[in-house]
Length: 475
Image (cartoon, rainbow, N blue to C red; front, side):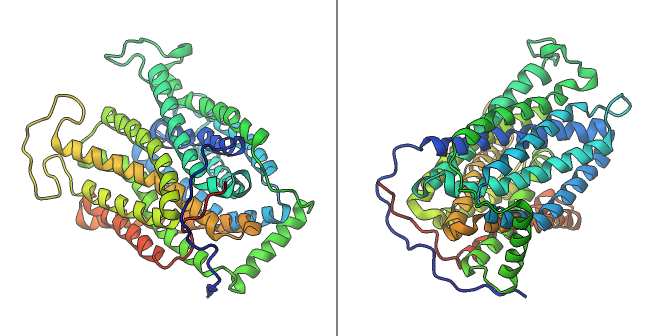
């Protein structure tokens, strides 16, 4: 078993001086890439396309959920097995941008091609093609994350990395909000009772589910457009001139040697273990959040779409807040606080039902107003969801910034490969525990208890990580 070495702390905690007034062009270009990429998560993965695929293309909602779970597991396992070696190889080659460009140019057309996945029984691509495409996209986006995260250390000056990381998540949420509203307003909702527009834009055929399918081309084209600033203006590490074949071979040997000879810095190893548990809980919360709200709170599609928009808006604030908190507390302190608050808000959610708050308080049946989220329990649940979104988004930003503080700059690709591994290696654990507790106690609320436990384990381990304190800002 690999031991973890006890190396010096990367930097001492020092009080921050006055923050830089604004990000430079390279930092903005780097942040904008995430703004172009994240709409895939919201439109394709969460609210529009994958639900369509699971129900209409597969043809059965229960089987569709199983299919989605299957290809998600396959892609996660593949990334876990390969991403660290990819990161080690890019360290040998130096430059990240050419590889990120190649991955973007492969991924975007695949996303656009999702349009060809048609409902069961109609001409077009079917379930097997859809599984292959969605699996490939998931793997490619995960690979792109390795290069993109590693590029933070060259594209953004060190004092600005926390702000840029938070801004990237804010932009991802902001563009997702804009595109989700646009797709709903112009393609999905037209023709629905009460909506003022009778037909979808461009005359799309709702019987062939074209309003949902158009999300693929829209997201793919937006990714291509939004990626342009990064490739034009973001600073990159200098290429080493090492050929790709040699780089992959040398990188793999270096990674194996790093692990076998126990040269993973102690704080990096403990941090990745802590993050693994937290991310297991966080990802399970994302996967089951909509199902939980529908089942426990009894919310339908209108409430769920409204919830999605509200938490995305909260996520914009969370990204900016995370960058500010990193500078005030250091990314390690910020990450710990963010996990604490996320756990507290999650407990508030799982102890709230349509008739009770914190399990014991029954506020009665009186409503604050007619319409969406009009009861006291609904408002409490919504408020907790907003807090989870703000601090959860901030935690993504802080965790990335903390990794840059603990990582040797010359091995950023290797360690961000391990960073990707920590996000996928045990991603099956959260859903497995949620399913087991739900079945054992026959309660969706009981099913969310393991999520709290996983996050708490990550928080406890994080207290053993040194480094990641505040740093002095450059003039």
